[in-house]
Image 1 (spheres, rainbow over the protein chains, first blue to last red):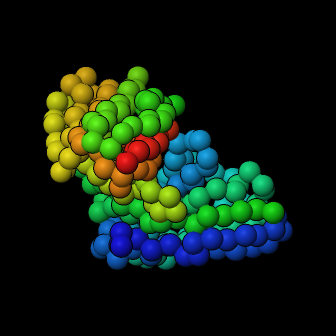
Image 2: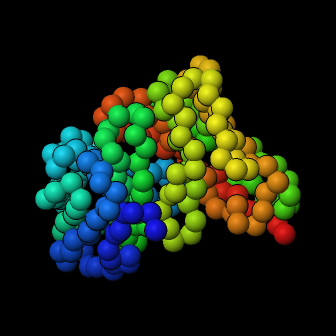
Length: 114
Length: 111
């Protein structure tokens, strides 16, 4: 139990579908993150939120749309995805964004695009 | 952009052996982190390093923050089968929460 819960754990969708990934953290943290993990590549930061405000969009295509309604919840809305978007999507949280406040990860959503 | 070079990419060792892996960068970092990822799970934080030259242990794991702030190593002593997994280093420079990850070291331990 990491304190960061992601649902669903697995998702298969067609390129024309719309779906959402959910992340909830029970650690009392103020910052939340989305990462993409593809095979044989380092984790790639996608978005950063601090106190519900987006502070980083790492040149992510607009077919990925994040939402952070409060400091405990983070969503990633997906629409019109491409096969190359198949990957493990990881959510993380940290107390703040300082370099002395490490990030803690959920177990991810394994996304497959047909 | 910033990149971390993590080596080796994979290791096959006998149970009981010691393991060493490292990360290097052309840029400096203020924080080095080491994570382990098991199949089907997310990365779990093993050790966090916040000061150049710092040497920190967590059980059989020891990690050091290089004095130049451009490298870090992780040692595992007396490996056991449950040490199997992928180990990632990560560096953070500023206060913006942006972590840069290495490519990972996949560890296999033969009983």
